[in-house]
Amino acid sequence: MIRPANLSDLDALVQLEARCFDTDRVSRRSFHYLLTRGHAMLLVDEERNGLRGYALIRFQARSTRARLYSIAIDHGHRSQGIGRALLAATEDTARKHGASSMRLEIRKDNHVAARLYEKMGYQRFGAYLDYYADHMDALRMEKSLVPHSHAAITGNATPPAHRVT
Ligand SMILES: CC(C)(COP(=O)(O)OP(=O)(O)OC[C@H]1O[C@@H](n2cnc3c(N)ncnc32)[C@H](O)[C@@H]1OP(=O)(O)O)[C@@H](O)C(=O)NCCC(=O)NCCS
Image 1: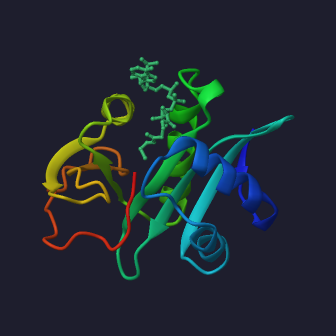
Image 2: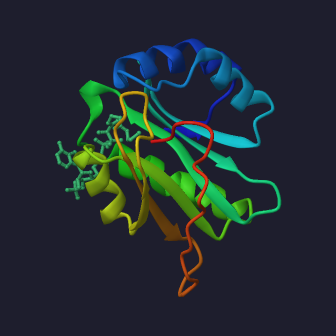
């Protein structure tokens, strides 16, 4: 079941993050901030035994552009369609918040996530060099959330302050 996260999910989110990422993890403090004051939306996929995954989007002030900040599915639950379902749910949530597009960054070597994003209609439009803690480049991707929109994709020169996906 996909539902909005709340503070009672904090421990499980931190543990999931530690299992899913070796570097550039979202800290407990950041999760807490994002859940309470972060102008963000965090969705979790939960089953009886706990969380199977989460997706986190952030909204920007005075912008209709949302940002997929992170998405992760726990090891035993990958390749079962959960990532795709969570991403679709975050897009719906972003639309309901008035977002007209979603952007994300992805490690250049993360081919599995790249396939997910491409299948979901995201297109590459640029890169940030030396973006992650281990100096890996980030590819930038964007998807319009508005049907039949032909809005041009234009890059910002300044990388976002935090890691994303
Ligand atoms: C990337 C991630 C979120 C995908 O979630 P998932 O639940 O495994 O993905 P899904 O089962 O919904 O699959 C969606 C698409 O992803 C791709 N994919 C999924 N698993 C794959 C695999 N093992 N190999 C290649 N492509 C794969 C496929 O294109 C798939 O579509 P298809 O089933 O139509 O072929 C998950 O692998 C993950 O959490 N990885 C670690 C954290 C991470 O890298 N997050 C993203 C960047 S921060």
